[in-house]
Length: 334
Image (cartoon, rainbow, N blue to C red; front, side, top):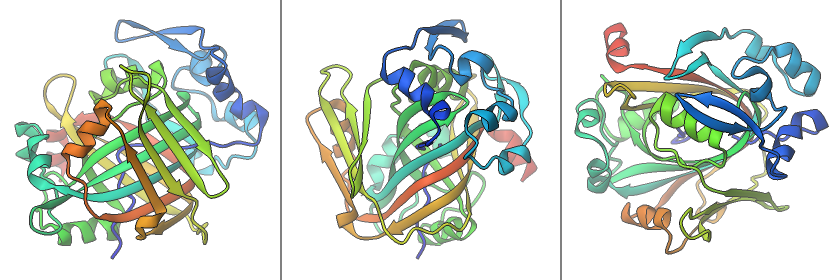
């Protein structure tokens, strides 16, 4: 059974070209001395980075010149549109070279329902895979080169049905897997740059906050360390195995979320990902999730995580993240 590719929203950009990794190096060196204004708030950006120069609409010719190793053919087929997201932007937002790791766990379904707003529950519910157990996806992204410069992000999401569609538990999950069209409700979404935080909160009304997220690789694994903002200590550590037998067959995946928009109305958003290198495993040995006494660890413990159902290692993918729209517009179209 294919369970996977469940992750809300958008991964690690590792470019061998010096120009394409410049923005990451600038952030790590503390050279975040550019400024922009989003939703009436002054926001720090990497000086000289893509966002500082072009905001959310860099010409693809610039990307091609700075990172000639990146295949831009897919992006050339997509059209950006100017939108109002609480600030002026362009949709979709492009992520040119990224990676991610995802682990899908069972969790207490009553607790998952408690965490979803009543308005959202009227349209989507957690998928029950067996009595009393739903699913959550823990995804760690590292974005090396995208319209928003480079940043790391952690997504903790409930796996749900699509709005307007039946929730038949495992049957619905199999259907989403076969179509590579997954739906969820985002619970937590820490990021490590102010630009990513404010764009996500103001533009998408997503539960983002700013904290340090350290990323490193060993010869056998990738490791994400989420720092507790209050204590400055490591809160959650997620280690995923570098799986062998990677497939280079292009896999197109859509990940969508339902939430309450910035205007108080129900909304939805989605990202389409072009997975260029990927592998998966159902072995619990592929993942190590270490919790502490921090706030995010306590939140995760409250979910009563159980069996690890699937692990995905995606060292290379591209993505297009679309601006949110009113949910009623989608339901009327469908």
